[in-house]
Length: 382
Image (cartoon, rainbow, N blue to C red):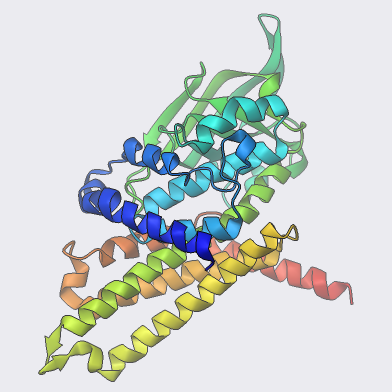
């Protein structure tokens, strides 16, 4: 890490230990999201890291952002995910939004005053996102041209606490070419929230269903052009994949740290359990897989920073890091034994949080499909 990255890491470590760590067990149990914590992260510059300074961002790299997310995830995967998804919304607006849209929505998002949400999945459109049926039909209301939004979205991270939602809806024929992207603000008539999901992990981060019933969206809230929605969503997910990978690395790193510390202090058969070769091999493998994952994530981020994004590497980073997080956190519970299965130690929480990392931003099975498809494309050129 360079000097800036070390400073980011140290500053976040201090903040998380003081502001996040003391509340995590209680907040996980009660599903409490603390907006004041998110606001403070914004004041420190961590909610708009990759956004240009002209829109209130810090203008740092995706490598810097990945290191920051990794550090936050050591204490709370939920807050790291909230920042990651909100930053994805910022990236969409910055890349595809008009100058007016950028000026209107980005400052509040980048400063941490508000949260953004990405809305693609539906009950019948998960991995097959192009089959979504939420509709946006052209209409005129009180002399204003726009669209009537009807349908629903599910699994929406930050649903109910976000203020700006990027919603994918169908404006044309079936398939990906008929999907468009819209900016929808909380409080818009016809926009409401359905059930809040009761989840195994990420319990501090709310996940809600969104409902649209004759929700009028002015034409100025269309992002780019009609039919660009799927392209916008896929571009966002490419970045989202390695940022989720960064969160997975942080989650796994904390689990390893808890494992090693416990193994060094726990005595059985008149010696620390760390000295038993069976556990040494487990922890050595955990450390190895974490470092492999970290390098993949940082290389994928570096490619985006250099202007040569590598979709295959982004998929690999997400796949490797999240599978690693699941394995490492599960092994951490095993190393701690009975107490690892209780809330006395945080490893059971990190194991629960790790599971969904294998599902979001495209399941790990879908990552393998995409990697294979890109491999086939590469080899077909020869």
